[in-house]
Length: 156
Image (cartoon, rainbow, N blue to C red; front, top):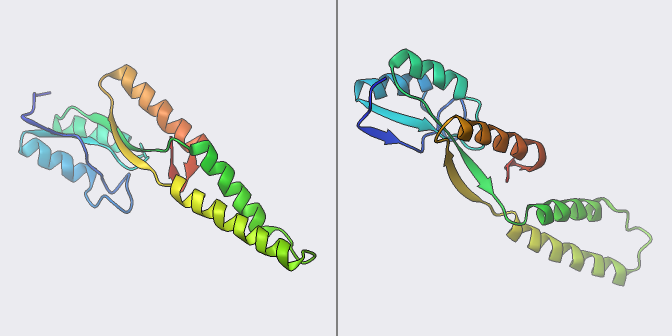
């Protein structure tokens, strides 16, 4: 494998970022080999394109660089708590409540919804594996985000 002149660290592909990547991994690898470039695949919260990417890189003589664009949220636990509380309040039966109690419940629901809307905002972070150890860490990070932190997107 050759040392390439340029390395692009933030790329999405059709195989891993369904709404954000239009390029095919095979086409990207062929083009990169022709232009003496290399690139990392950093799809949104997904490592699903990595196998196809590695095969295409091997075929075109490019060193694969594995990465991921992760979503981070400092208040993840609070976000999940609020989501569950809002869901309970929306599905609760309030037929026997007095008008003042209904008004109070609606005000509490508005307050929780406002806090939830603010907390659920997330930040993007591009993470790239430097070596094999980093690759394993990145895979574990991705697995944990999908298992324990999923809220519309894998969230860490």
